[in-house]
Length: 168
Image (cartoon, one colour):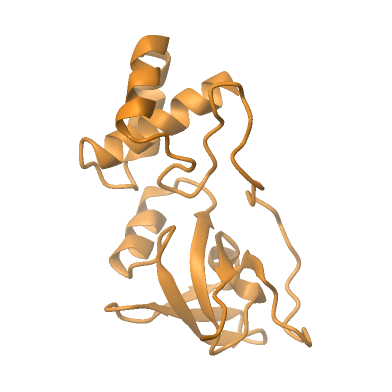
């Protein structure tokens, strides 16, 4: 947990304090996180206001190794397009067309994929709407406020996890 905390805090610091793009912070953090002292890690945590997740939505363990909440990570959930009831959270493939979601987590660190998502405003914390969930064609189209719609194949859509936003 200690190394995981270090890595995720360095990623977060690189993005927030230094302005690096979220698609670049993983590789940069790999290069430097082992070289940063515990004292500097704790200062980064303090300066950042004790964040609970990194730029990709992964939880950051606290100083004692406890996760701040349920870890949604990296599941290979099955696709259920015929759900009678829309899920409260999960990969984009699980949501119904017309449903509004809040992006919670993006699995993986592929820079090109993260840049694509970022150009379309799809990143943790963003509110988006599922435009189409085509189970037969294997695509999900999603749109975030102020961005063009993005159509993802099933495998790519499975990497983006979201929480349903309650209807208002």
